Image (tube, rainbow over the protein chains, first blue to last red):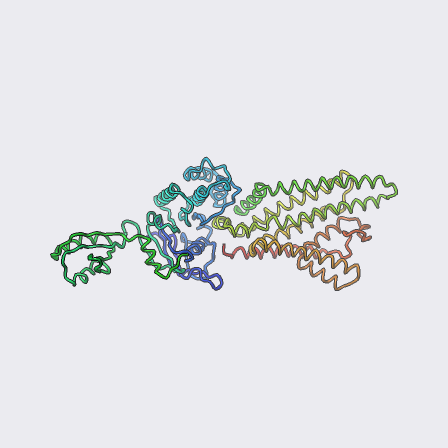
Length: 306
Length: 278
């Protein structure tokens, strides 16, 4: 089995008396699109900065691309788009990519080729010679993305990559993430837009008050947590207890029987069993729980908007 | 090394692109034109004054050249503090530093690149300005003060010290705080030096010691004092007739102290930048 691109155990960061990250334990696999979710102030950005070597952890252990945190050889294979990023706004788009290519140690010929290729990919070829201070917010976000993809990274950190982008820009980000996945590049995505995360990520981890509290696979093959609704004819009270073998929390609500199942291949088996019991099955409907529902459930009622 | 050179070049590029260099050169040119006009009239009057001996004429010219270099020194002090003051703290606050530091280069390369880039700019500015003053004196008055090379080297060391403090301070303090601290330290050295001179003239050892302590706390001003002392004739030094002919002259040990001070400040800045959260 290939080694994870990120592996952390009990990573912790304190700033004076304030605990920014209490315990970060997670694993990201090669080529995986990994979503990192949590409310504002949960410690997402500090966690990301620790993984990038920008902030030193107070305690815990971690390896990124099989190297210790902050290792330069690992950083050469990492791309990073910070949230609210600022660049040297007196540079042109092309100069910015040239600068980062040079800092990343990309050889001159490859740097030029990659710069042209990436400028075309983020649709900024015609604005390449304009200064960044004259770019719109969306253009800045796109040049930032191009910067993050320079040097053919094996792991890309994207902190709110769709912030400030219109629907076309958001689609571009989704497509780029898809291309990275196809090339086997792992993406660590930090986003508030749960719809985006749901569409792009293979797996998400929830961070609550600086702790990783829940992990949820989203990839189709592993899709989890379906709510099944059954409309049945008269049935014995003991039915709910029998249904527990198919899924969690069987209950009767609004004249319907509901239960949570892990995978959709339970459904044919469940319908066969119900019919086999001689019950009248009028309707069987399954619904995937939205990421937003998950988010609210995992975070609990005690959370306040950040 | 790659990161160091790229960041140093980026720093120089920024000064050119943001017209900082243009502004400095335009103001510098205006200063030199004004100085040249003044020098022309002073030199013409000295020549017309038949009663002055060659020695007196040379002393007057030396004084006028030192006055010009004093103004250049003042401009260089301000430039050395202000040009790099926002370079580290400003980029940390705005987040520009995060994208630089996430690249596979050492943090020391970023800091040293910024330091070297700014230092090169300030030294180039100092050489253009001081060279302009000396060229005016040479061309108009056929006069060159003694020991120009060690004199300018000391002014260069003073600039390097202030650039270093400004860069290293940026790793710890916010921009405004940093600027106030470095200028405040230079102000302390400046006033301390005057206390020392007055103490020396009045024979007051306590006042003299206060000045020496101020120079140890911040040796920038004493470097200028030593430079000015070197760039005047022994007769002029002995007469104590001008503010540049100091009664208490800094020793060579002060130069070593300043060089050591610079190295320690730079190392402290590197150490702080290495570990600080970005």
